Length: 354
Image (tube, rainbow, N blue to C red; front, side, top):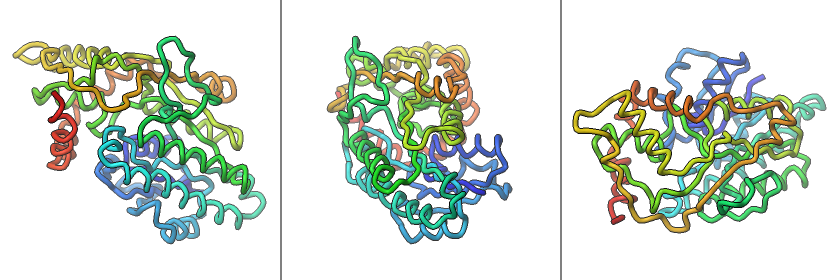
């Protein structure tokens, strides 16, 4: 039986689809609207693979979602599709409300109808897995314990507020209607195919182009970092053995400041692609912090380890080296996606910051 993946042409979604089809012969129905961050080129290696069926469409389109479920009868829905960039949510929150809240609601209602019409065995095995973020928990001080699955929700950006709302919808559809759901809240992902508006690929692409490396404020914001294929493995384990209705925090056990991340990216580029003009560190530029910037996120991932035996395989050092090497080897991919719209966005977001 197939699975349905939403947002499977985006960064984490495309990595999940590729990883799934190396581990399983179960087909993937891949529904993606192909917004700026969705890219079918990420899935080019599956062009002739009959196990991968791509559908361009919107998760808010109930008729389309119903038709996909009826025609393919998936045993699980893995819901990645989301607007996910905090800066973009500050400039234009409406798209985040539509996709992250309305889209999740549409999927839940379609999934509920689909599940309700399954036979008893199908109902027992069906899962709706919702992929969320640690940002729903808000910001930590340096001396606070990491987020657990019972931490209060205190979202501080339009993005994290929209994801918090979607988490609550998923929980409610389980408790009210009995829909068999699981949820994972992950820390900052990094790795291949990440759109270069996020910190690590932004630093790599700007450094190679000789552009300033913009660091918000003092650069002491702390995040936990998770290599994307480790995240994919965690979701597979949740689908296999996760408890219905459970929430699992998925983290990399890598708390690092933004300025330290940039320093490590610079050091790798100096080693792997040295510039005759000198170290890329000369390009580091501190800019005005963004509004409401959360100071620290940290994930306590002991629950998923204790219940499902998952731990990340990559250290930050090994994962970052793989990431930098991937971007160095895929400059054509970077060039094709950093279009006029991308350049306009970078100018809009960073150009006015002194």
